[in-house]
Image (cartoon, rainbow, N blue to C red; front, top):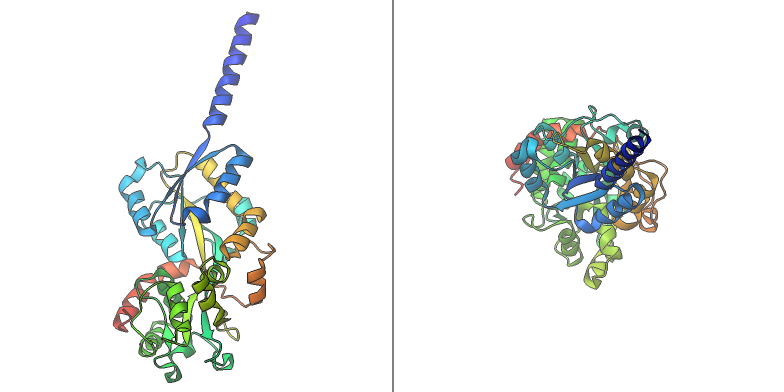
Length: 338
């Protein structure tokens, strides 16, 4: 009897050990590997939970989740922009979760009201201006970019870009659709060229004299200023950052974020990873390496972010950006925003 008991204990111990070693979480990430894998490796080191990472384009990964359905191996979906996070929720590929750690770490307006997704890092969409051609006293708000004084002087990405769609969605939420339409009509008239390229390309165009103002997410400027590409550093050095709407609602901000998939077979591990990504250590990494603002209050900023100074940010709940996205896209199309 004693031998049987010992054998049973031994078998149980082996099973527990095997389960611990087998603990894993599968991640679909629209963020480039270099911008997320170091954190995932640290999570594995601290928790013993293996992370299997698949990276790809945001829309392609969302379609993959939809096509895989309940058979999807993904446990956590990481993507950028609240508009995309809302699309994932609407596509029914995410499930709501409740976590005291996440609720305590992440301000309410940076997470879905029903718990389907949580923001992990913050970026602001700002105005940059060529320092030797624009007096910052001429700048004030996003709305003022539609003024005739900026005719032929603005560079910005195309209307198909989710960052611009969310900016317009925020204007709809704040000013109403009619006023946002009037703004978009005026903005398009002020384009220096047909929109093309990414945010870095707008800075390069401004530095080359194509335009005087460039609209972009802050972390792109940080990456250019601190990157290895000498031409990008030189271009970024010619522009300065301006925080719009400081006398009103504040500068438009957005997030990268994540949600636990509806198909998650490793839900507990996925929630643990999400909580780790919202920890002080991970949030500090976002600031120092990615030049993004921590979503968690009280985390120290990097030198680059600190040099840009503090700013008033819009506190609109970002779930509204996803809800207003269809109206924003139609509005931009009517304005002739290519």
